[in-house]
Length: 346
Image (cartoon, rainbow, N blue to C red):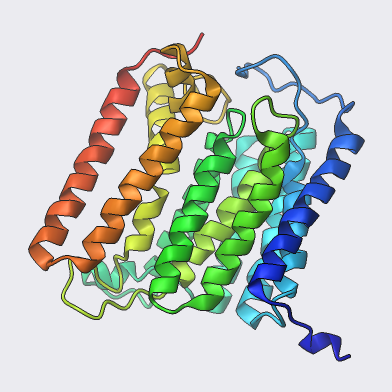
């Protein structure tokens, strides 16, 4: 058998991915459950109970192995996958040694910008605003976008099962959108990432035994961020969307709203946004008396509801589509305003 041509069906690869993720995360749990971490200064956590934050390494390994089951990957995917491993390693080192925020930022800029520039993939922001900087601004905006997604996913890994629910919902939305335009390679990748996360759910569902940690949240955010740029939106009919402003960018609303709530709140009280706290939307919902499982249902329902509107906006007339998108942004704004007014968990 020529191993370079080895390939299985998507169904077989998906099942293998789930089992592999469960197995590797189980090994990780056995090897790290007695690990004693270094506490981060001035950082507040939802629970004083220690949960190993090393699930990300197992998930990244499971995902990279499983993608090979679908056959020889394109060079772009291989290249991005190499840097995805690097960002996961940086996240692991941060979990172990608590890097300063500027050290993490430096590595993120380097690891994200290199594949963006070398593969010449970007959000065409210059076209959107009608200027030409020889793609320099496009590279900068695209790097910032991916880093924003990475850190937003990292921020939302703040409660048992939450990062799993949010990132899984995004994977499903990406799979639907890419399948709609017959971009099946991205569809397959998003399904395998979903299965990887699904295997981790066995250990992260309340009460959690493992967390993603920076290694996992940065890895997943990195993959999702690049998938959003690789997605080639080519509208066939007149629509409010354009090849520059695609519906893919809207599927990240949940982690981005939470990120905005946390950062703006901490700045308003003179606290560094880089220090962990109990001021996320999930924590504010817990403060209102909701259980952790109820909070997960709320986040999942919100994600699905918003995506239904996003998907409907693709098929409706230009006028109705515009109204749907306008309604979405009103929903996002109200979500932010209501969240920022809720009491924080103390």
